[in-house]
Length: 230
Ligand code: DC
Image (cartoon, rainbow, N blue to C red; front, side):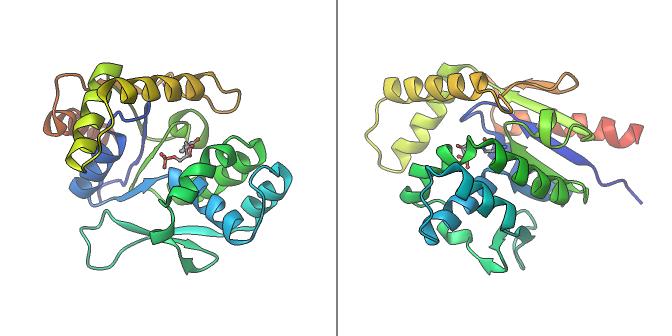
């Protein structure tokens, strides 16, 4: 039987991690898991339960007690998943403006990160998973079979996000997007807990000048090599 790998994909904001991970998971018939949803699920639980997200202790307790799980959706392409909070499907409630407004505060608490790391490891160690985040290869799954750090210049990332948002009818300027990306890069890379950085043994994919097919081809070559060596 072919070994089912644990694949970690990290990288800065808007580097195309989710798009790559979904395509790769689809290709391999693995579970695609975007770890940002865990931080979003705790944020949702706090908002639902009337817990002030500025109360680090209360939010940490919530994160410790919550049972968050992901399940592949039936009849999909095998790469979509639903998120369960204490058995309840909350997938549709994770990307609301309210959750967006509070999630970065929640994601900065050490206790929350510790609790969620356990959840992520439980899911990741099953194998056959492509896990996306900012600290997967460095902190969450340092023993992952393959670690990819997906990077691109700020200009390239801003241009892609600009086109995506423009297609959705947004009027935001390219300059404003570039500035916001730079700001997020700085916060992610300079934070004390689990800062964004490539793991020592990660494979860098620079996606400037590559479309999704080009990035996917590079990632698939890395996977094929790993499976050959396994
Ligand atoms: O990728 P996203 O927008 O869904 O992430 C939501 C929040 O969680 C964002 O504040 C970054 C944070 N996050 C993190 O700190 N570590 C991860 N592994 C994934 C997300």
